[in-house]
Amino acid sequence: MNKKYIQKNYINLCSKVLGTKIHRFSDQFFGSASRLLKEEQPIFKEGVYDKNGKWMDGWETRRKRIEGNDYVTIKLGLPGKINFAEIDTSYFNGNQPEYASIDACYFEKNKFNWVNILSKRKLNPNYLHGFKTQQNNKVFNFIRLNIYPDGGVARLKLLGNLDVSKLKFPNKKFDLLSILNGSKIVACSDEHFGRAENLLLPFKSKNMGNGWETKRRRGSGYDWVIIKLGKPGLIEKFNIETHYFKGNYPSHCSVQGLYSIKNINISKLINESKNWKFLIKNKNLQPNSSLKINYLIKIMKVLIKIQPIVFLI
Image (cartoon, rainbow, N blue to C red; front, side, top):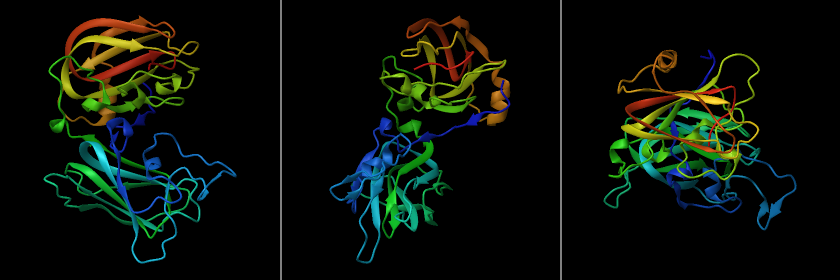
């Protein structure tokens, strides 16, 4: 397997796919708070203005003329533990907040008992900030981003894991790989054109942009992705879809699986994954199609290999 890889191992708890939404805010005069939750990379539109001023791809408040600071409260779609925060000020240059902090709580019985998970930090203009958060052993379902005193933030991501114990699993068959059921990407070899997380989306793809796609391989080897299920399960059927991939689908793929509830170092996990049990081996794939394979086995982790390039929706 490739020596170089992209480590993931966390879910963005601020993703709208999980049902996360804006709860309330102090102000959004120049830019809607909902833009904080967009999955797409921030963009800049030269010379584009709306009724309030320059259009910016993010949440932006007006200049504050009184004491205090601006904030936005976000309701997480599914409760989880937060390990890292990404505060992106892309294209906010001169109008970014000077500082930011984050509070969180588990809202129940009509009470917000806020605790600080990120102390007041300096923000730079036009920059993607990554911060390790505190209280990462606690479960939260609401967060509050505070900015000081005002300004604009393009995106907010909270990286962590869903609290599987609070998820309601159906009694009937369900998709074990769905992000809504706690599954996550552990690592992958490449995602040049399409993010590996797209494999876990709970809805049908709209186009090729909703799939996992790697750069074109010019040497030996294969591309791969490792997925950890939110809950161990008995697999009865694989559904491998190459919808919208017509001239850039993989020629064939393999799937290997492991049942283990141990926490294993990611590097070690990757090295050992080549020895996992084959569930599907060198299966030919077709363009823009759906392949269903029946199989009965209980697993916790999945390794998908594709040759020579790109992949599934």
